[in-house]
Length: 349
Image 1: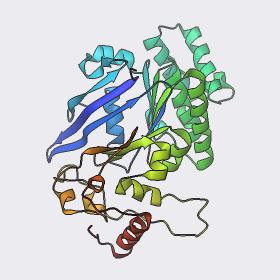
Image 2 (image 1 turned 180 degrees about the vertical axis):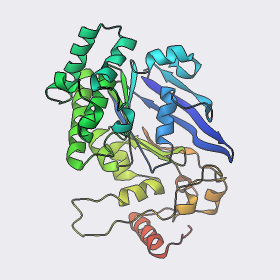
Image 3 (image 1 turned 90 degrees about the vertical axis):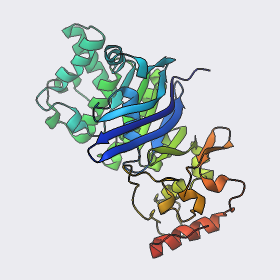
Image 4 (image 1 turned 180 degrees about the horizontal axis):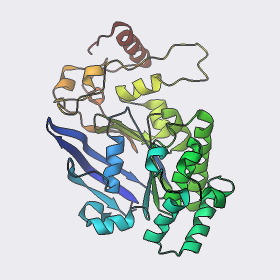
């Protein structure tokens, strides 16, 4: 079966005066029709650069896609001229950016900005475009939509601006929607409303969604599959139940241990991941997470681990999965992380 979107061995770099920053290295994944895929990881791990590469939004220079393929409905997007890519962007594929205030033009009304999408991609007349935008604003829960179209972004709350961005992204009824941390700047109540809205729209129009976030809790309630990124690479991927119940990579273990839980009856404290994110200007010769990993072995600092299959659909890139690596039980995982957190040092297997 052909996937809606298939990314194969994608590598994107930024060339600066200091040298090459390898923001994304050898990333491969797919998205099926009607599926919600989550991409998680710390800031700077390559999530946004990956999806901007898909959308053709990497500024060149200084950015450049070094290698790989991005196939959308069997068509390689990297081989398309800019004119054809611009025709797809906003129509077949749309994106919701992180900060709706900086994504909306403050000197144009909401209506002017939304109608421009229909002028460009659908060839609508003014009256028809105005009616369509009002319909979509109403669909995302903004009351008195016709009045709101005459207002400016600063007259809207953060949650309402984000709803405007969602409505704008859906105007041309795209097949793929990329949501880049759409709830980061919102309070938890509005966050829940936005996610529920996206869930409803996914069901109504069979929309495929890539949700980028650093919050595994959001992913657990929204996505069917998860990709965990670190240092510009995918370190683990699988179904939601695979990641939350039987994660195999130490970085994923660290992310899971840093999530507050309502069922934490023993009141154990959260364990942070020690250290800082890697310097992608000077990438490590081995695993990028080795410097922060309490389970690191000598080989982790020397060779990049290969992706290993755990079960159908679940894979991870870690030397602990090698047949000759020491086996760790849950108690050992916990004691290693707690020991690292207390001492600030790192133990070795």
